[in-house]
Image 1: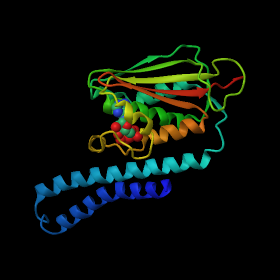
Image 2: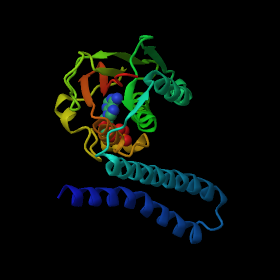
Image 3: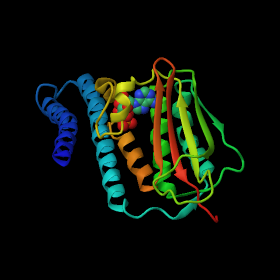
Image 4: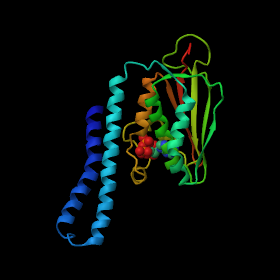
Length: 241
Ligand code: ADP
C-alpha cells in the first residue's frame, strides 16, 4: 500500500505543474498569441513550473538510487568538516539573500566518519537548505560537531563515542511536536502550501533519512515552537582511519 500511495503522490505532484504548463501552452497558442506582455509573464511561470518538475524528478531519482544501494553500507573514511564547509560555500549566497549566515562549531580533532561523501553532501545540502528556507531572516544557522554516545544500528561493541554527531540548528518557527515523527515521510509537509511556495518537493527529509540509514547512522529531530529546530545526524566513526 505504501508503494501505491507513493506512486499516487508522486504522480499528483507532477501533474499539477504539468497541467499548468499545458494550460499556458494553449493560452500562448490561442488567446494570448499576439500579447507580448502576457507572453513574458506566462513564460516566467512556465519556467518556474518546469523547474519544479525537474527538482521533483531529481529527488525521485535520488531516492531510488539510494534505495538500490541501501543494503551495502559505505566504507570510506570521510572528513565531515570538509563536506560541511563545501556545502556551506555553495549555499552561502542563498543564505545571505535572507541576511542569514552559517556559524560552525567543529572541534579540530573531529573523527572521520564512515561514509559516502556524495550522499553526505546531499544530506547537509537538504538540511542547510531547509534551515535557509524555514529559518527567520537575519538569524544564524548553527552547525555543531561533537563526539556522540548514541548507540547506532551498526553498534559494534567497542570504544565509547564510536559516533560523530552533526547538529544543524535554525531559528525558525519550529515544528509542532505532533508532526515530528512523520516529518521524514515522503511528501509529508507541515504546511503544504508554504512548502510549495518555497520551491520544496516534500522529499528532502525522506532523502536525508534514507541516506542516514544507508550509513547505519541515526537522525534526531528536535524542535521548540517559536524557537527553532535542530536536526542531528549521528554517523559511525571510521575506526582505524
Ligand atoms: P520540503 O521540500 O517541503 O521542504 P522536506 O522533506 O525537506 O520537504 O521537509 C518536510 C517538511 O518539514 C517541510 O515541508 C516543513 O513543513 C518541515 N520542515 C523541514 N525542515 C524544517 C525546518 N528547519 N523548520 C521548520 N520546518 C521544517
